[in-house]
Image (tube, rainbow, N blue to C red; front, side, top):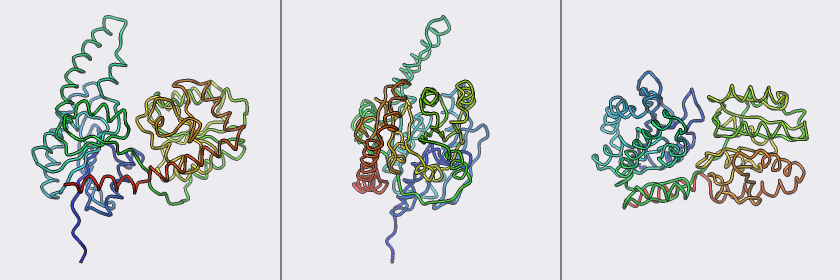
Length: 403
């Protein structure tokens, strides 16, 4: 007779869907691995205009709960979250009766501010993974609009909001069973608000990928046929990912046989398409749109390097995926990949927003293939040694089983 598995409820504000198959794929992969040891159920929340709740049967039930949010009045999302999500969540908990709850937090508002009091009240062991700092107060301060009367008023309003937010985080991060972060800077930041709650680094990790055939793979293969050096990049198409800098680097590159493929979609796509036209590099660049993670990872072995000059990256799991595929990677100093790799050892790091550095890094990989192969080999070994999904889930289970 098989032993009865403990029940694990995972709650996340990022999780793959049909509309966005790469959104929070790392959460799904962790849930799949933990499903070998626990009876897993997932609650995934989204921000569309129309609220609804559906249950999708995958390896385990996934409750998709949508609730309305206005970008203009984002803080009001706490009201809609309490109104649409929490009642559903209470019913799920009452029906499923989990032994422990793990929250994956990427936005901080509204989930944490609403969830933390509920989980404390229920008395269940509850764990938190904080994946990024994009809405933390220190980040908001960097973007205060100054230089006009309206700008000053906005800055004053943001200052008041920031003080309230910091106070809320001090309350929110306290009294969890355990908090995990993906890197050391984020651990230090969360520790400032966590009080006596233990905070440790869990990192991120990747699993194995099965080979597959897909029309997008065939499309990319045809595009790469005439290339002398093949570069791939991936991410949500937004300004902070640095794709515009990468395009400028390609335009300055002396070898015109170089090809660049960018995987992803988002609000910045039309801007990038205009940039490609202005730079006159339409025959060198392919924007594929959003692809499933398994397709992306099957594309990686077709390339000579992975370059993502993102200057706002807490971790960057795509770097790990590229390293696991045996590619040399180029990232940005001071971002999540800096600290995972050492410059010139397991990859290359460039200065933020520096096109010349990007050009020089790619040129070095093109000219010195032996060097490129050596950092690629060390990068792959690093992932195998420290960033495999099995290892991460073992660390999670060790903390879970302490109670």
